[in-house]
Structures are given as C-alpha cells and as structure tokens.
Amino acid sequence: MSTPCALINKVLPFSCVDGPGSRLAIFFQGCNLRCQSCHNPYTIRTCNDCGHCVAACPSQALSLSGNKVAWRAASCEQCDACLTRCPRRSTPMARRYDVEQLLAETRRYAPFIHGLTASGGEATLQLPFLIAFFRAVKQAADLARLSCLVDSNGLLDEAGWEALSPWFDGAMIDLKAWDPARHKALTGRDNDRIKTSIRWLAARGKLAELRLLVIPGRSDHLEHAAALADFALSLGEPPPIRLNAFHAHGVRGAAAGWPAARERDIEALADALSRRGLNQIIRPALYL
Image (cartoon, rainbow, N blue to C red; front, side, top):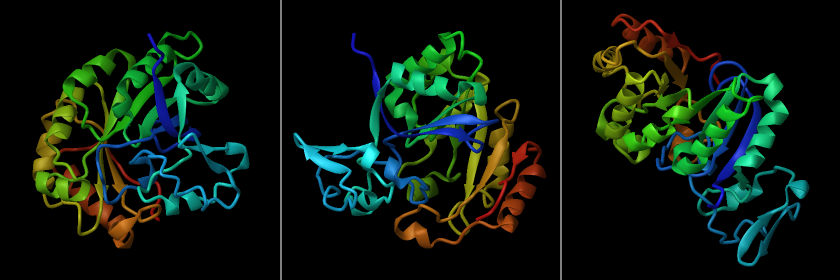
C-alpha cells in the first residue's frame, strides 16, 4: 500500500491565532469554496504547470522540467512575483509531504508548541493523509500530548468526520453567512452541509469553535442574530464563538475594496448574541 502524501502550501512553526496556545499550523493546498474574502487566495487552486510563472521569477527559482514547474526553495527570495503572474492565482511553491516528513517537521518544534492545526485551503480535501498524519501523531509517545485541530469550512460529509474522529481533538468551523443564498454569493456554495457538520461535531464534543467572519455590508450574522443564537443554543453546550474582523490584507478581486470591520461592527454582533444567551464570545485581538 502506498504511503499517502499531501500537497502543503506552507508549515508555520509558531502560530497563536490558529487555535489555543502556540501551534504548528499546516496550510494545505486546495479548497472547495471560492470565498471572495479569502486572505489566502493562493491556497485555493492547485498549480496546473502552465509555466506562466517561470519567466516572471527574478531569482530564477522556477523552471520547467518534464512539463512540470519545479521550485528551488534555496534560490527563492519570497518576492511573490509568481503569484501575481499565475492565471489561476495558485502557487508553484507548494510541496508534497509524506507522513514521515511532516512528523519530522513536527518534532523540530514539538517542545515549544501545544498542538497542531490543519488549515488551508481546506485540509479535509486530503482526508486520507490527514487521518494518517493525525493517527501517527496520536500514536507517537513523544507527540501524543499535542492536540490536533482542523480549521475547516465544514463541507466534509459525516462519513469523513466519522473516519477522522478517533484521531483529532476538534474542528473550528467557519460559517461565512447564515442565509444559504448569502453564503453562496460570498463563497460559491450554500451552507446546508456546513450546518450539518456543525451539528454532527457538537453532538460528539468535537466542535472547538464556531467562527463568524464579520464583513460590513456583506455578511448577515447581525441581521439573523436571533436564528444564529437559537442554532448555537440548540447544539447543547454552546461552543465558543469567535468573531473575526474582515480586512483586505491578502485579498484579491473585488473584495480587496470592501471596508474593514471595526470594533463597533464586532461589538454590535457580540452584544446581539450575548443578549440571546451566548456567553463564550471571542473578539479579535486587534483590528487592521
């Protein structure tokens, strides 16, 4: 049986915004949403080796080899010229890891972190690898103490969550809008399956956070605060709700011109939810 591999955009050794404590954050390449507000738009699509980026690289870190784009990390100056040239808004710098390679990377930082977060892109699109990697972490005597979380869009089906369930500690799920039509306008997909995932995870104690992105004039959480609160309260023990403030850093396309969320926008939603019985509300640490 072949060892599963995953296409990884980057591994961030120390993150304090991808779950509790200091965490190693693994950004998987590829996503099944097309969020206009995405802060990591180059993690959405995968490289198709068209080669448009090669000539754009000023440090000659890219080349075409056997009709495949090859990236030499040692020569790369991280100028991102390749990203701006790519017709797919993808990256040629993603690399494939097998489980042992990612375990070795984890061990480099294990003494200094509290856990791992699989993010993206959408990590659950590469589910066989994610299961194999988290299982290996949980079965390793020197790594088993690390919590394994997934920062997910929630589109994984119940069978997928069931398969992952023995090996992960929880998921942080993004709900970009309450109304299905509004969600589809913002992301390209409605949110029915996402709500199903939230219910499934909550029923099994695996919903680490419910995350709401506040986009002034675009998201509808405040408009539907009553329904949103009823939904959260119906989950049993209401999960922590993290309010994220939209900003245009890294965003491409029309959304780059959208206004940033300010403290007043966050507080309006926080107040509306708390008045309806939700008490675990996490506000942004800063506003950009």
